[in-house]
Image 1 (cartoon, rainbow, N blue to C red):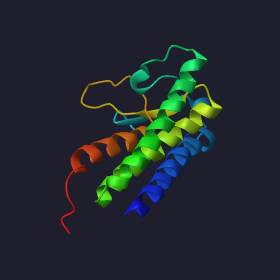
Image 2: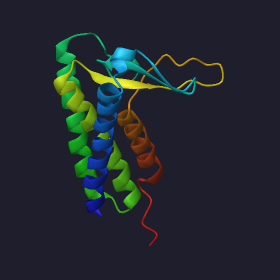
Image 3: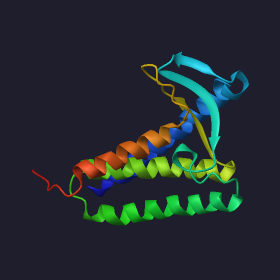
Length: 156
């Protein structure tokens, strides 16, 4: 079952990096400043997050960038070790999503001062001021998956 972990992580990583390349390079989001995809539900804005979710710990110090890189890599190693105890494909997929998303954000931090964000979703009169990226979606989905599926025995 461990064979699920690496392919899922690689696909998540590739989709994250590919989406950033396409939106920022091909669509030239920074030059445009905004792309209305399905307004107001989905709008692209250029952004760079030097902290973690919602800009937490974005103090502008370069040391924080390296701390966040080390933390993400440490989480990936811990997940890989923990995955050895998994029994269900859903657990491996969930861990792979987290690892691929985390590594996608690590690559951004290695080459930029922070993580490229561009997705903004608002709804029903509520204006969401925060941006996120595809890696964040995978990390969130993977975490929910581990909560839902971890610990359940394989029923096969």
